[in-house]
Image 1 (cartoon, rainbow, N blue to C red):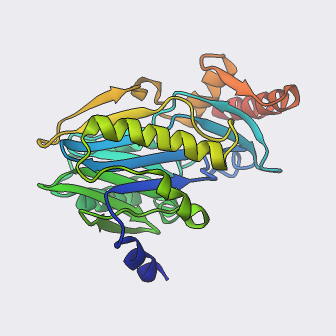
Image 2: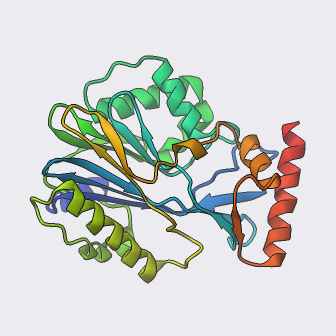
Length: 285
């Protein structure tokens, strides 16, 4: 089935679209996995005439693990992670139950890995997490990671179901499954430049969210990052990397101390989420 699916998407062209729901932020430790989970990552990678453009939403929804209800949501969360060479887009588990994926990526960089292509980079990251963060490595089978850059041509790689793939120059792939037909919303000319791509992708994401999601599930401000021919990169819009956290204890602390703005879906859900946060903080001391 997987090979048939890949053959099917290889007939399409020009962009990569990923959507992952039911991302678990606070699970993995038996003492924490019954509290809440987060969901709602949207990311698109586009090959353009003058570079590679990555766009990701920044909304993180907090769901009850008991009823899957959205308790609250938070904007301004980083989902694009630049490396010394290439850029990761994380669509899936953001934690191993203790350490956030941003720190794992930083530790991966500190290990000075050698890689030549985005696919090799993803493979090396998998090996690194297997040795250093085995709990997260186990979750990579249920997590989509994207890596883009020039190696030397424009390349996009994906880690899906624990395996790595290189996306062909002129195709797109999706893990939307049932909503795959919605991808006609992105109507991007083949020779579009990065500016055209940015506007088109953001408008497409907004339309997609409007059709398939409630306001509290996905969206917020969109981060946009461009990779140039020499693999240098710069933020085009909304660099949220300063909002990154190293541990889940830090996340619970910031929510409890009101260092981040949380939008609650009801007063009842506010009380429930804060009860969860207090329990997590107790276990972090």
